[in-house]
Length: 630
Image (cartoon, rainbow, N blue to C red; front, side, top):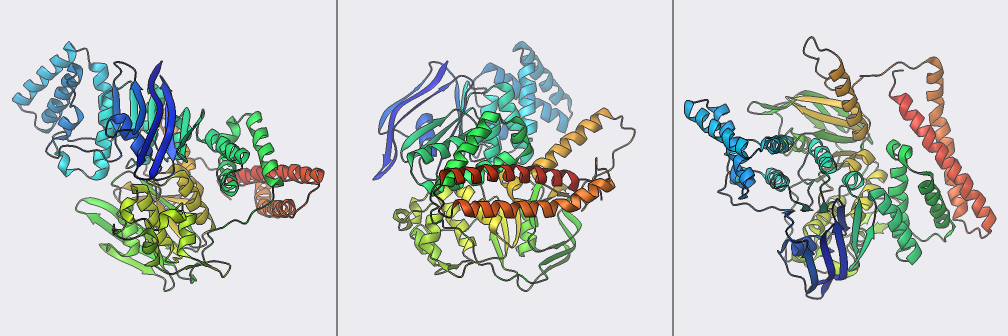
């Protein structure tokens, strides 16, 4: 059943054409994502669908009578409304009954008077009259999962993140037949994002959404629409399928070859290394990957601009935190935290909203002071801090002037200098945009420009607080490649699990009440371990309260000691992997050296594929052994 039809839609602002004659449809049960560069018109398209903007020409048709709900990127509420009124604004009788019950229950729990008991009894009668108990359970699950309480609280007292969660809860409670959403995972913590994924899949919700959360795209979406160069391309699959077919399309069209190749290699090869992907991928898809990889390798190599910044020298002493304590009233953030940072560490900070992740970063950079303890920063350390608040960009400045205000050039690792215009081009600001005024930039483009001002300062210790919010997929890929090449220290807070998995070697998990758990591994590995532990806890009979997780130590649950044979194998794996990597590099160099003999190229490609597969297997085995006790 067709829920939405868009036919021959055109939209321009002045001389900037956003889309030109695009058409698409959404069927019942499809979960469709819209992806594009920042400023390409994603949010404008959603506004047109929601009736908040008008297309220059074309038709938008919803199936007669279907309920449709919209979640805006920056939702607006009446500041004088309570949370209760903002949530239950519908005239639906069932919603009225549930809203009356929720507010009466909250009053009774806070102040169990006879009057409140009477109000609760009347509310229960309303719910029973509407036969709405199943619906009430669903509402309670939504509010609890999104951490929404205190229904009498004024909307004006809520933070931006709390308002986004409130808007999300409202559209879910409405139970529309089609849900249109702009960046639904922004301001959600990782538990909430995972819950939302399961909710959409379990309830078979029909969706059209804009998101740059690549795990969300991979786990939830059945189709992806890409808006590029005013045209729309449809990919009937998830994120992995999208990057595979996008690279194929660009390769076949012969457009922007280097960009297609880079996206293909960085993204698809990394996705294929994930254990989940390797166990579920069909042989046909792998064969298709290898064929395209061979074709790519046979092409003439073009000069690639790589952002390998010359990092400021980093000394022996980096950063020491000794017995750090920090609290706000009764809320404890850190309680005697100790850690000495080492060169090249990549640490991800995780925890629920409000656990103190941003406070942790502000303590390190000196923006906030600890209640007690000492923070010692090495003399050579230059922080580059990308904060959620960002900086105020003057609307009357041109884009290139913002970068030039920071510096005339950025020194590169090979001794050359990268000019502001080159850096801007690399981060998706083409020459024609560089002399635009900041006032013309979209929200995502402003975030991207702010990120460049941080990188221009040549830091050797990067601290990133939610850097992926509002960045498009191309920019995310460029940023991740830069961070993978970055030789300094890196601390990041991000709700983007893909970003964290790709870049963080270890995690600090802020669990509340001053408890910080350390975990050596990726976020996905940590979550899988946590799920396994919860399963085991559910099976075992608990006679007393379980012990709290070890503070400041990696969890050792489920670890066993290596056998002598495994120790010998583990010690040899690093040498084997290094030798294989060298062979891979030698073969890659041969392929791009100008060999024209087709058979020789084919033999090299086959050998390269075998070595790559062997490296994957060795790395996976090394990870398995590294989780055991020596």
